[in-house]
Length: 522
Image (tube, rainbow, N blue to C red):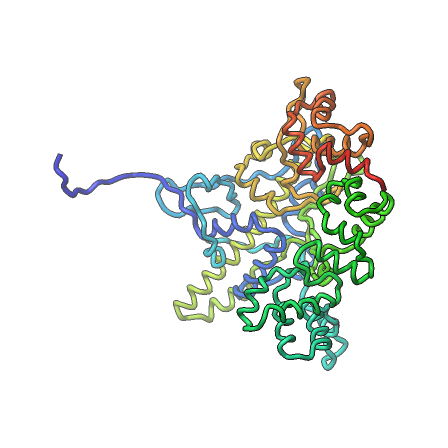
């Protein structure tokens, strides 16, 4: 067959991701903090978007029973009454996917293409939205920052900062070390400390870099090791503990032998320690107690990390007559709207084509963002409602009744794809009477039942193992085989290696380690 050029007509279907669809999917998997940052950036960039400061209820919360539509009741008998979203109407021709105003973005896109770029999310423009709307709770406007009048500084400007470890050590260095060479060496040593206060640098390499003798660096190191906090500039745990004991004038020969044999302390071989330290058992116990009161990370108090509390996306509470109420947390949902009056005004005044195109693009983008935020909130509430319905016994009776479910169990009921459920449950939290949980917490592996009944969740089995070990008799430590036998008698068909894996994930030692720990003198 000769190889010659020719023309062919071929008809095929393909799925192309529009910038609008990328934005909707991206918003779906953002956490509430990331969503707030994204919306703030859009408010700064789009002149047609504005923050809604009104007190009106959001549209998503009103999807449900009337008249109290903000709450979503969940019962045991039937699935929740949730508005069904229409599927995407795909064009049979190749090209972009058009999404109607009320369409869903629930499609298994991961199986159609590999989308690794999030760059296009910021400038998404919509397709002919006809109205604007609001989503979520109001976001507070900018305040005065604690100002009493225009001349005084804000309250936040008068707060004192916490000193860092470097600042604390440099203050001591400048007061205690006067020689400029030794001070330079000390500054380099301070810069080589890790977050725990340990010195991880190679002193010989430092001597070559600074062009000085190693003996002088060692002398400076010995000097700065007396700085506060005690134990700083240590090169290992033993030296850190020794420096703290010297500061307390408790580093005698017996204690020195104990520090040199920390491996025996970890193994609780107190009899061997009595022989090595040449002291009685009572003295060994006292010395070990002293070591326990020392700080293995002396610089820890200078780590000023702000602990960010988890803000739940969904609020759950019990109904007086039974069942549960679910509602979105308005504090996590930015309330934005499209300024149609401003759009209508400037559209009449602009004559330049480039400016008209820009205004039209920003109007479409603003409408699409409002729709995407609304749909994101609706989907989160829909998924959370079904999770609560399926895990009802967990909320009523505790972790031992946690059902083993997978993404498909939720996706099949709410008629969405597993990938959508996965995105919804990532970094989303629900506040329940039993605490705050990530939505992914409720998806666990299944452990078969010995009686052939309902399977047990891996989390409930892990909890059962912890309870058994916590309640074990110190004189009758439970081995992994014994734990397997007890669990099987309770109807949990679990293997020995599974018990060992769950025990290790809980940070619980083996039966030998627990026997040694519980039999050691106190």
